[in-house]
Image (cartoon, rainbow, N blue to C red; front, side):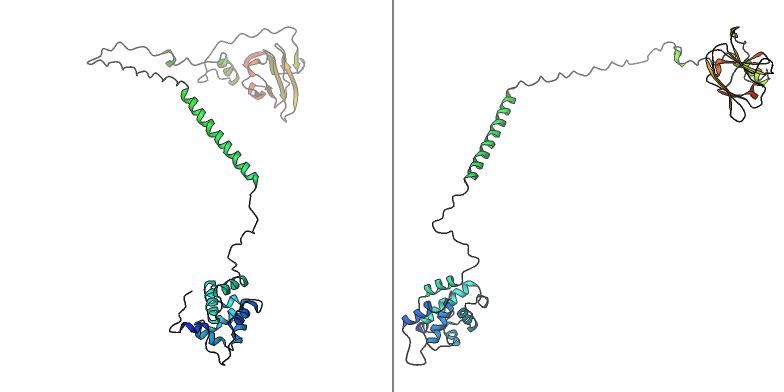
Length: 323
C-alpha cells in the first residue's frame, strides 16, 4: 500500500535516532518481532519498547495514526480499518523496525486470518465424487436418447402412411331459371281437408236428459234428441237399498260394472258396492243423500219408475235428481 511519507528520508524507516547511543542489533529486533509474545502485535510492541520509542514516535515516521498502531500491537481487528489497510500498516511498521516486511505480513495473516477467505482443501485429499451420480447421469442420457429416437421413428412412419383421399366437393345445383314475362295462373284449388271445421260433437241423449232433470223442455241451447234405447235388465238381477215395501223416489241401475258409494248429509256411507250390469240400487227416502260413482255414464237414473237419463257427474246430490 503506498504511503504518503512526504520528505522523510528513506533511512528514517531503518529507525529514528535513539535517545541514547546504544541501539539493539538488527538480529535481536527481528527475534523480538517474530519470537516474542503470542502474536505479531506483541512482538512489534516489544521491539519498539526495546528501542525506548513511543507510539507517537512510530506514528510520526510511518504517517499511521497512533490509534491504529495501538490496535495493531493489541491485534484488535475491531480497532483497525479494512484488512488491506491493516496489511499496509504492518508493512510500514516492519520497515520502520528494519525487519523482513513479507515475513511480518505472513505472520499477521496467520495470527489474524480472514473470515471471508475460503478454506483450502486438505493436502493429500482428493474429491472423487459419488460414483452413483455418474450412473444416474448416464441412465438419464440413455432415456432421453431413446425418447428422441422413438419420436423420429414415429414421424417417419406417419410420413410413409398413405394420405386419405381428398373429399369430393360437389358443385352446388344450378338454380332454376326464372321465366321472364307474365306467368299464367290456373284456377284456385279447394281448401285442404285438414283446414275444414269439423261438425260440433253432441253427446247422445244429453238434451233429453237435461230437459228431464231441469223440467224445462224449452231450455236454450239444448238439442232435443231421441231417448237412447234402455238396456234390458236381467229379471233375476238383485235390487239393493230400500226394501220394496218402503217408499223410494230415485233408483240407480248399472249399465256396466261400476262402483257406487251412497253417503248421508253428515258424510257417513250407508252403501258401498261395485254394481254389476243390470244391478239396481233403490235410494231410501232420506234427505241429503249423495251418490258417488266411478263412471257416471255407466249408471241410469229412474225417478218414480221413469227413466230420466244418466248421472251428470261423479258426485251427484239426490236433490239434483228430484229425490
